[in-house]
Image 1 (cartoon, helix red, strand yellow):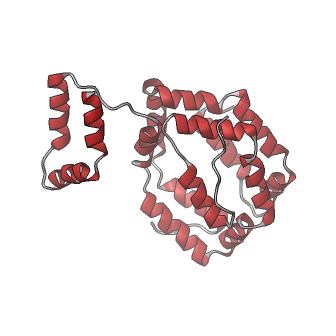
Image 2 (image 1 turned 30 degrees about the vertical axis):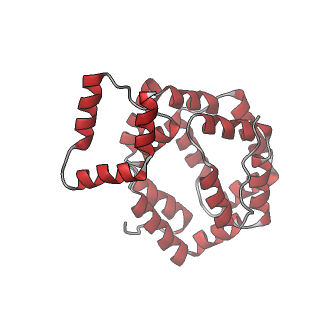
Image 3 (image 1 turned 45 degrees about the vertical axis):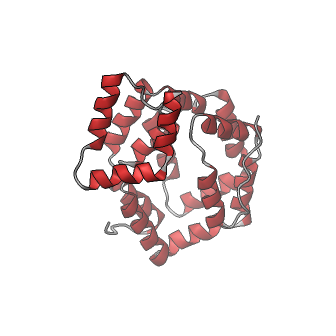
Length: 231
């Protein structure tokens, strides 16, 4: 019951604002909170996938990536053409087909159960590419490059790859939720989603169009697989 009181307190915006005001004034409130927890044997709030994701996002220079992407979008014809394709019926079919799979519904619900609700993120993607709002499934820097390769290379150049790899391995060893997510991605059920995607002519056309434009998509696919140990 007392933990319920603590949880309610932590959920109050006013309390969080108080803590932030103290931090802004140089008060190490987190240290004192940990000290009190240690003294009275209070438990930490259970971490979930959202906490794990936030740890990764803390390493990502989001503002720089956004600035790079907006620069390419405003000034690079190749990237503009890609965005136009993402808003096309062919790409919309890829998205709606994947989102309609039972395996997708299961994976979405798995994420939600482990504290990561991606509905808002998917809704934002839908809005950007011109799809209707996402309906959650029921329970079951400076520019250096040119074109799409330039965009990808410029983004990769500012990513702390070694730190991301190290954090990834740490999460596998210390976070049960993250390990469960990793196992789910490597599961036959999730591979069924990948197989369905690979079998779609529209997806293969997308890959071929990118190859025709000089984008080494196969290299990037292999890079992602090797980074995260995917089959």
